[in-house]
Image (cartoon, rainbow, N blue to C red; front, side, top):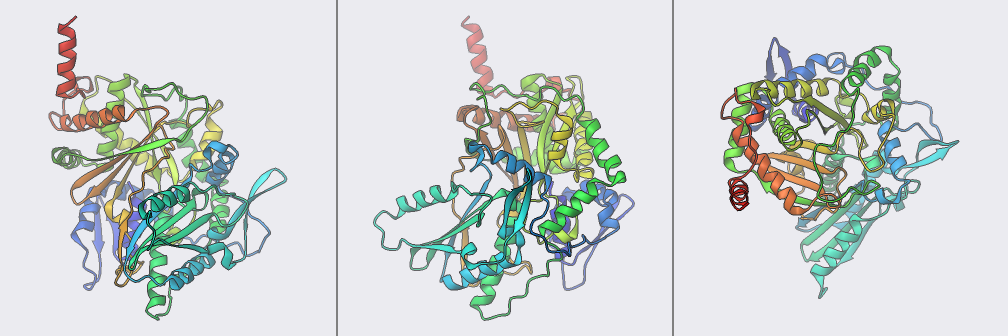
Amino acid sequence: MKVEELIAELKRSNIHIEVIGDQLKISSNELNIIPMPLIERLKAHKSEIIQFINSSEKFNNYQSIPKILEIKEHYSISHAQKRLLILAQHDNSLMAYNSFAAKVLKGAIHFEFLQQALDILVYRHESLRTIFITIEGEFRQKILDFKEEYSRIEYIDLRYSTMKEREIINKCNSHSKILFNLDKLPLFRACLLQTGEATFLFLFNIHHIISDGWSLKVFFSELMYVYNSLSNSKAVILPTLNIQYKDFTKWQNDQLKDEHFQNKHRSYWHTKLADVEDHAVLMTDYKRPRTLTYNGRLLKKMLPDDASLTTKKLMNCYNVSLFVVLVASLKLLLFKYSNQEDIIIGTSMAGRDHSDLENQVGFYVNSIALRTKVSKNDLYADFIRKVNKTVMEGLEFQAYPFDMLVDEILQFRELNRAPFFDIKIVLQNMEDIQGMRNFQGSEALTDIEIEDFPVESEVCINDLSFRFTADDGKLLLDISFNTDLFTSGRVEQIYEHLVNILRQSTQDPDLEIKEFDYMTKEERQKLMNNYLNL
């Protein structure tokens, strides 16, 4: 689904892409051979890329985002930031929007160079030294001048600790649960634990209001590149940042006032999401609390080989992307559970379709609601085409801020429900996760091995969140679920049912939706036994 990221990757690799008729043409110089995995990703997302390029005025008519030339005491905020500031007024959401990462570093780490590298990034990216204030009842962002105290890395030596494992767990737990005051710097924390003579654990926690998933990749990529340069006595040469987040905010707000933009994007969403009533499609195991809660747990799975193979067959058969196949499977399962014909699930868009935003650190990600009408008499072939149309339209009209739609469309908000959808789905590639490489594509650190340190997530923003990861023909799935609503056993069952839906999807394109059966053999046998024992 990350079409913007894929196009940005092509640009960084000096690979040219254009649409000719209904085909994609890619070209590069002789020294820059296009790797086969990248070609396969282009094939997998072909229809989405064509749709994106054809519909993107910014792609075809590039205009740089103008910079704010006047230095001000404070600046306007984005609509996404406004939502987080409102949520931050409620204590139970303070930690829900922390982004925590832990990395194992093996090798000789020079602490002073790592500290200097972080200092350089905080100076470079205004978002990392931005606070949020209220002026005459209005939220504003204020950018502070760089000070070394804003970027201090905490160093803890555990080499000789007799309770090393316990201290690591405790530190990870406390670091991930830091409460950030949004009106004070810093809005991130970094910590380096030395666990052996040449082994370290780097902890990093940042508030979502100044970052997103793409931002973390930019941050770690640049941090590793700068560290590498300093430790090897090389010049630090980073790409020039054409703008900062405050410039994007003004540009976005000006864009939203444009009549053509309003007629195109706003009109689509107001029509698409009109008359949304109850968007609940899944019975919960526990009674829903009166207010939103974020207590979560993570279930990690790898889809069976036959289910992964099924997705490829469906992609080829219907000329759709992997993301569309996964969305269709999840929607079909939710329909079978609820018999509700109006199914809405959410997804996230990177919000980086303008090239000026590629190397930025900030909160750019935007949510979109994927609404599809399902009928039990639909043929599967017709159903997946409907889902594909929904996804393509969402991609085309992704620029309109989700949070504005919430304010404009929903006249009544349930305090214990997220707006428009309770369930979210995301697809990413393994290279997006393990992309600890600098912007030039070489190894990030000299003589240093980097590994993810497993940390159990205890936060879930939605009722359920399905995060698929494509990894060399395999499909990994992380299901994050709200423990105030669902049991672990129930989520295991949902996973098994989703796999069964996938398996059945290739049986017959004329199979009607009502003919799909999500139950496992064991469940059917149990039902039969119960029936016979009546």
